[in-house]
Image 1 (cartoon, helix red, strand yellow):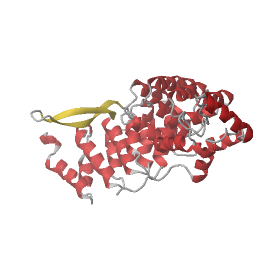
Image 2: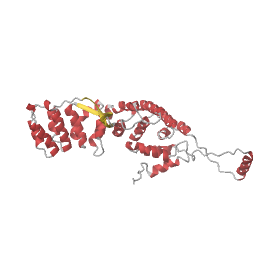
Image 3: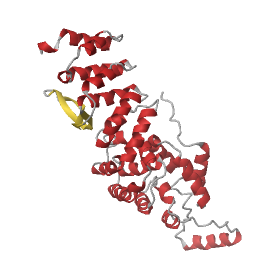
Image 4: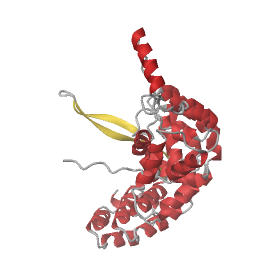
Length: 362
């Protein structure tokens, strides 16, 4: 039996959102809600979007927000109902303004209505957003609307990004990029809409902030993020630093691989390969795109540095790159000797391969 999904929103935030079902929020209450939402991590956007719409009870079907009264058709019933209303009057409910009026009165409701169940309100919210998102979560929310199931909402999200992307802070974009860069071929509803993110993530200040995150973060799967970021040539200037000082070994390995091979490769979607055409068996495999990547350092120096890395995973990747780029190394004897005497068997086997197949025999 699967365990229940742990809620993303805190109990206090859920209570504040639930209060919106009974009365409109004041500007201070709305700002408190938006501040707590802004503190959420970007990678929680999908689950959080469902919880926000549920807890705030936003949507045209919520009856508690749209109190109504059934009017009987029979004249006698109307007569007796009027008498009952005069003898036992009901307490008057304050009219709840429609969501469009709330949005027109306070544009900050647009950030909350990005999670509205109605596509018309999501589209209207995107048109009301004229300021850049101040947190990775709300940037991810705008990107999530690029993947909306309603076409006009996706188009409105594209126009919204064009208005605000130039003003988005570099650290906000970099924090969101760690999650969003790998969504390109995972979120399935967007097509050309995803390209609107490229000018933002290709900015030099964003790539510098992203490289700093890739260098310092000790946990989290960041190798896919770096691999996806290689589509932007501006990341090349940060690869030498990532190769030597990044905390995570996969980051150092990818950086060394690009520097030694002078080539950067990144995911470009998926392709199908046939396993058995007779029985219609096929398998989906990742498809890569590549470009040339320049480096001022000699290949031999990069390999000599890489095979001294403290991680056997990095040393193995560098050894593989050395086998491919062997022709560019003038004197390989010291490098081959060091690989052949490595303490890890996977690295040592590659050194033994180089010993068994000297370059003169190629």
